[in-house]
Each structure stands twice: as structure tokens, then as C-alpha cells.
Image (cartoon, rainbow, N blue to C red; front, side):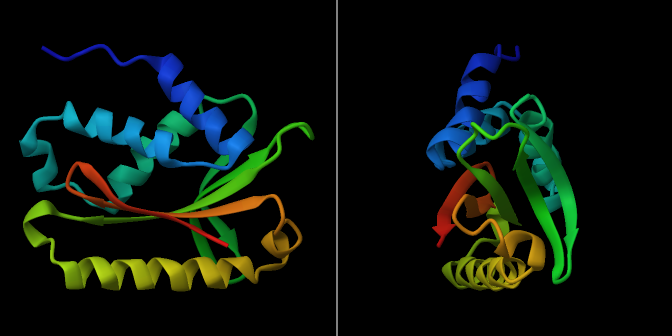
Length: 155
């Protein structure tokens, strides 16, 4: 029997990104959803499915325009959130990585972290984001199986 998902908690977590510049509560909401899924789902699961789940939650907010695979000069940002209203203090880009539980090693995690940091550094230099450096939060989230194993804000 599937449990009920409280959309108020999801909305609060999204608002926390935009108002406080913190992504951890949102990562917990994604973990919560993943924990409700049958293990067979994870056999074919990869990064694009995690991004799609995150995107489907993030587009629930009226306070930001959410883009997936957003093109900038230096590549494609996994998820970008642009504020709709001037009163919203922060915008965000999120670089997502995924490692299957059975393929997890500390070395693989370190490689994914470095890869994500390199991508964020490239995106930061793009004309569009460079102008928003004070208000644009830059996050890395690396999932291992059902867990957001690594979360970092890149300054």
C-alpha cells in the first residue's frame, strides 16, 4: 500500500530553496518518494529519471520558472530555477548525478563529485548566469540508490 505524499512538505522544501538558498529539505523529499518505490524500479533507473522526478516536483511552484536541460554556452544545466517575482531572493541551478547502489564505491562518488563541480564551474562562466552570481545558488546532488548521498552548494 502506497503512503500518502504531503504536497505541503514538497512546497515548503521548494520555497526553502528560493527563500533561504538551502536544498537539503528538497533532497529529503526526493528521498522520501524514492523510498516508497519498489526495488525493481531501480534496476533500470538512471540519472534522467531522478532529474525528471525532481523537475516534476519543482514545477509545482508558482514562484519560479523551472527548466530542465537548460542550454547555456558551456553545456546544458540539469535543472535551472529562475524567479518569477523580484521578491524571490534566490534562483538555483542543480547538477544531478546518480550511482546505482550495487555500483557504488567511494572512488566512483569522488569522480561524480569532481565531474559535477567541473560542470557547475563551466556554467558559472556563462553570460546568463555570470550576471546573477549573487542570487544564483549552485547545487550538486548525487544520489546513490534511494539516498541523496552527497549535497553541496558551490560558491
